[in-house]
Amino acid sequence: MTNLSANLWQSAKNILQTQDNLNKLFAAFSLVECREANLVIEEEAEDEALGEFFQPTWNYYFLVRSSMRKNAKVTGSITIAIQLTSTEVKEGDWVHGKCAKVLVGYSPFPGLDNAWEFHADAPNAAGLCDSCMNTSTHWVEKDTDESSWFYAIPLDKLTSTTQVRELIVKPVHEILSGRQAAEVLRHNSKSLCLPPNSM
Image (cartoon, rainbow, N blue to C red):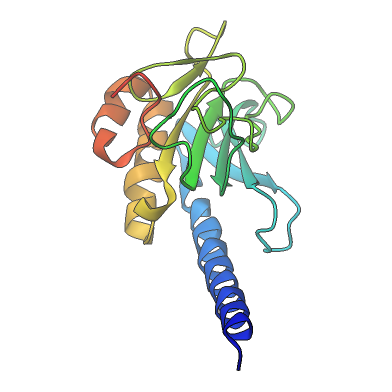
């Protein structure tokens, strides 16, 4: 076997193994779902990809309600996304810009029309996202009183369901139960992709 054939074989094997691991992680995002007296989070939709990670970003959407009543209105949405790569730009060099990451966002508006939708440009490799401001731990959408936010986690920090619970499920539930996002995320700041100019 030639070196080229061996390299191609190994590359294909690596892609398939990575894809399998990403599918397992994506399935673990459903752990964010809950049914509590004052907080209900339910799976709503996901990007069409058939479990094949060939696009740069894959979004998973959840709806948030403030009670378990059958007629409880949707009060917001959560987006959890895997961003494998991001667009390179000239604006700056963010230490986390060229690493795969998981993005976790909350939008305080009903339905999915105003949900966070992450892609290679949001955030880009400089850590910038249109219409967003950076805080010390996360990004907030301008003109929303910081009620619409997202944060980022290096993909390699999420290698077990325990870490998914610690870095995604617990913080999201605490913030949506009334704690300040900065206060909650500061607790895990060493495990996050902190926004540029915040480290």
